[in-house]
Amino acid sequence: MVEWITSDGLTDYDAAVTFMEDRAAAIAEGSADECIWLLEHPPLYTAGTSAKPADLVAPNRFPVHETKRGGQYTYHGPGQRVAYVMLNVAERGRDVRCFVRDLENWVIAALAEFNVTGEIRPGRVGVWVQRPEKPPLPDGSPREDKIAAIGIRLRKWVSFHGISLNVEPDLEHFTGIVPCGISDHGVTSLVDLGLPVTMADVDVALRRSFDRVFGG
Image 1: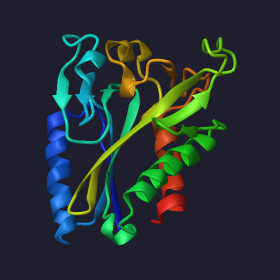
Image 2: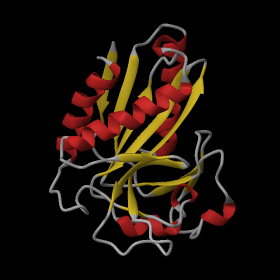
Image 3: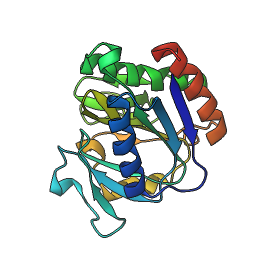
């Protein structure tokens, strides 16, 4: 049984972390259901366990939160749908790589509902879309933009943190960091791709595609 929570407005980051840690502990001990929490944060940067100080280009621009999730620097802000996943990975196969792949496939399936082809790339965390209309990279390879970031942590085989999907954030805010340590490619959103998608539309797609990938 997975409980779905959707929060209106902007959710304080530290309060969200406290909720996730408490809920993950309760799931691990069997006193709470699994949970997906959909929300938006005020503008902020987070530093994962692999974050490099040099990738924080504008350290005084927004609050910077140290976090113990995997990955490097990410941006969160209004117009970005954050989906925190508190799921029992022990009961879902105890395979962390498979679990992360399922998270990627979840995002890709949700994007497909808007006729957007999301893809994954070895060595580049997250979900990407090709941008053939943009000039290619210096080596001639096509340019791709990141549309979703993924970073999780496990405690007692229960996940927390999760995914962030760019719906209509201010993409200029990503310039304060090197997102996930990748400088050769850019960042995009559904609206940037020319799709007049609302947050409610995305929530419906995420719920529907979650059931297909993970089961209800």
